[in-house]
Length: 167
Length: 323
Image 1 (cartoon, one colour):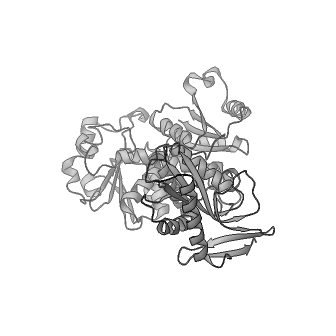
Image 2 (image 1 turned 90 degrees about the vertical axis):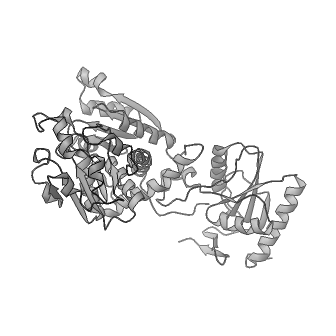
Image 3 (image 1 turned 90 degrees about the horizontal axis):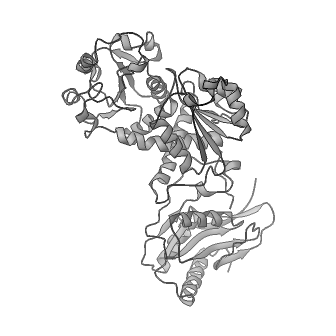
């Protein structure tokens, strides 16, 4: 399997997540996508797994650790968590796990909403370059990229993965 | 004024007045406030955007409402807040403004929110402050009150959408009102169709028509076909002469009553910067009525002040992917 077979990747992630949740006895989960790409992936997984609870989304712009360097974007969509987070099993979904800083920000924001019973991290793509001790529980594809390259999920219709060279 | 407010890339460094700021920057403030509005609506009304920053409220004039909204805005962004009531502080011991600035700088503060009875005070401080510190004007004499104008613009956009077809009337004590000045500049920059000022000649500054506004002395005539009615507080504390015969007579001619409101557009909104003098510039039933958006203005004020603080402490670049 490669990143060019996105449908297969998504099905593979959905199956792995299903097994993981069963193994760890995590039911009645609240799936939450990280804006933007994570929400696109979460929507697909939510449909494939036919989850009963509505989908949530996190916009972590106000929680980024690089505000003092790069500032704030004027158009930030609000986060939406349709259910209480307290004592609930959360499935946190992102498209690409790279440095780990986005996930850290998302965890900080989640804990501002309450104290979840657990957080399961699901990513479509995991790549090298971690800067924080954050690892996914479910991964679609692991990728090693040379410095100066990055992988981007384009979407929402159709979804596609591209490897780009940073300008 | 314009140049000192912006950094070398044209981004907001200080927020001292609306006059001279480009339309795009005003829109950016409104858009950023819209984004930050969500923070005020979530269970935990706090984000760590300005964590570790120290914001000082320097109020040389008494104010509860404005200071409180600035304080709340700063705390919602996780900043530390110091409140200085200068009336009972060192200026009464003879400390100069520059001395005070230097002392506060030595305490490693990042942003000063300044209210002062003298026009230009915030600008003066911006000229003398250390380069890493930002100044926000919370009202200087009769000059400007830019955050009030921006929360008014936010409220107008919230209820009316597009600025371009709007007719806006500002009613009452224009002469003493920094809110009126900032609002006129903001409305003109955002391109409304028409701005009217309504009041007795004694309360309308000479030459105000040069700003592009239309002057009316009769309330009913001035309110004809307007979309927004912005009432102003009668600032008797700033009046040094008998500019109106009596409060009672003022209300008779310029007070917004149900009867007057019935002669206007049915969807015209009623605004007031507060605090309201009920029965002086506005009837209680109008202030509490369906067309009043006065309390919404207060809520919007927090988001606007959050936006301006975030923007001055860090100008906004393109959104980068730093996953």
